[in-house]
Length: 239
Image (tube, rainbow, N blue to C red; front, top):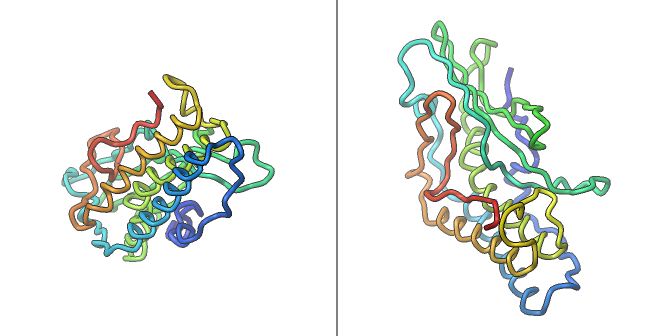
C-alpha cells in the first residue's frame, strides 16, 4: 500500500504556478478591485516562493521523534479548521470545499506506519489515505514517500492560509459564503472579506520569513493532530 502518487490535485505544487482568469467584479468599488488584485498577486508570489524554497528532507526519525520506544498507536483528532479549496467544477453548486486531515501513526512488532488521511469535503466522513506508509502492509519507507509527505505537512500549511485568503477574496466578489466562514460576527460584505483575506496573507508572509530547516513536525500526543503552522494559527471564523 503506497500513497506517494495519491496526493490531491489541490496540493499539487505545479498547480500553484498558474493563475486563473480574473473574474468580473461589478459590485466592487475601484478601490476594492485594486485591493483584490494586489492580494491575488501577493498570494501567487508568496506561494510560488514558499513551494520553491529549499527543503530539509523529512525523515522517518523526525516523524517519530518523541514517540514511545515500543509498541504504540496514536490517531490524531480531525483538524478543527481544515483547508479551503476550489474544485473548479462547473456543475458544483458551491465550488468551494473544506478538506480535513487526520494522521494515524504507530509501531507494532517493529513495524511502523505513518498514514495521512483526508476527507476532501468536510463532514462527509470519507477519509481516504493520501500519503505515508504502512509496513504492516509490506510498504518500504522509501525517500520518495518521505518527500511526498512534505506536501501534506509543510505544503498543507502553506495551502491553509493561501486557500482561505483566496476563499475570502471570492466571498468579497460574489457575496457568497458556502463554507459558513461568517457564521459569527460581521456579515459577509466586501470590506470584511477583503480584510479577512489580508489577515491570511499576513500569515503567509510570516511563513516566508521562516526557513524550512527551522520547521519540524510537531511532537504528537495521543489524539493530537499534527500541524506545521506558524505561531498564532489562523482562526477562520470571522469575528
